[in-house]
Image (cartoon, rainbow, N blue to C red; front, side):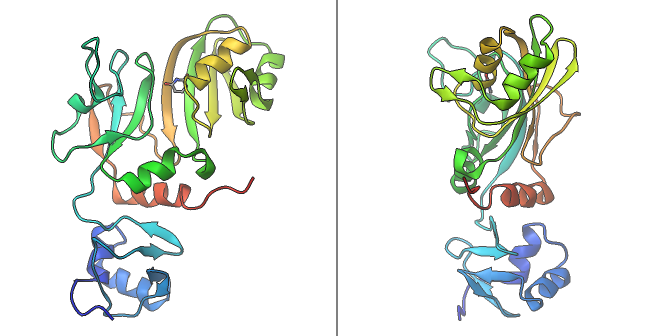
Length: 241
Ligand code: URA
């Protein structure tokens, strides 16, 4: 057993699992593992090294990790610097510690983007094998027919292959809500192009369990510990194919 380090209950409480007492109860119930082994009360951990999970879901316990939710406005690029001198998403969040965006949104696309220095979680949120859903609202040219909506749902042929099944709803005659879990380059725009309804405006409204209708464009807020746990759950295991 590790003699040095921090008490596991304290680390869990910091990660948002409730009071230290509530965390002790989780440990006592055998729901917490450290490096794959069920932890016992009084356990200490090294947050920089040990892998902690609750109910099999990894918990980010490394100190210094930050997770922000940004509402990206149109015209801001997701890369760290832009040869054309356009504003970048890193200019919209605190400078230190340095963070990067989890995946990308096109310069013209608006909406939710996670910014973090948590490489592990970022990988799991973006890699298609984990299948984390991203929801978009797309205003399109024309009024898609039911057949077009069905095509979007079932998969459309793009130049890099057929898209996976998506959830698609027509919420207004020219507005689609599209939920995908692949994240190919410009996927939603290309899907809509493919059915003859080019996108006029595209907004990402949800990343897995995280949404926020009140966050104004250009603003960010910390992701709450409860949201972080839900994100970890959503990205916990690769989806079987
Ligand atoms: N699909 C797109 O076409 N663009 C984005 O920015 C995100 C998803």
